[in-house]
Amino acid sequence: MRKIYLLVLLFTIANGAGAQNVKVNAGPELLHSFNHDLAFWGIGVSAQGEVWVKERLGLGLNTGFLKFTGTRPLIPTGNINYTAVPVLAVIKYPLPVIKNLYGQDAMGYTFVTDVHYRDNGGKVPGGFTYYFSLGYEFATHFDIAVKVGRSRLDKKDRPANVNERNLGLKLAYIF
Picture 1 (tube, rainbow, N blue to C red):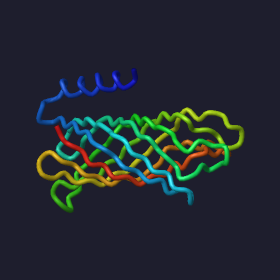
Picture 2: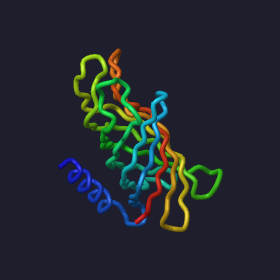
Picture 3: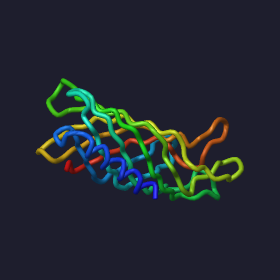
Picture 4: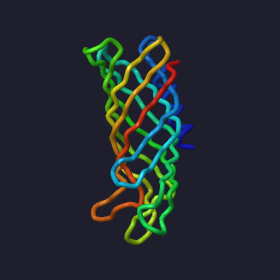
């Protein structure tokens, strides 16, 4: 249901601004977690809508669905698979180094399933998320980006059973 609300919000933003100022992209993502020695790999899809409010400033929303799998759990009885649904506000800006190169900050909340605290096994519903992306738009309709960041699933003195720091690659089609 949350995804439907997000899509309605994206289309409302798109209809409220001029068509030349709106960009929507979607595509696959591959992520690798690097916080611990244990490897967690994530794969999924994400979609992003952005409105260019000025020539050098874009604001938007990003969401997706990611499935992570670990080589082994961080605790012996833990689950090695979990899903994440990020809902992020985006600030996007072109970088003057190379044409079509951009930087992007995304922050918000990530909802997770099958993530537990290590100490008592309690369920972690999600956490604050921040990502920085460095991307490049090419061939009129394609966007490739490298992103680094984390979902703050560990709470104060309560670590989670998953690896939350990620390095990712996204390839998207721009509509």
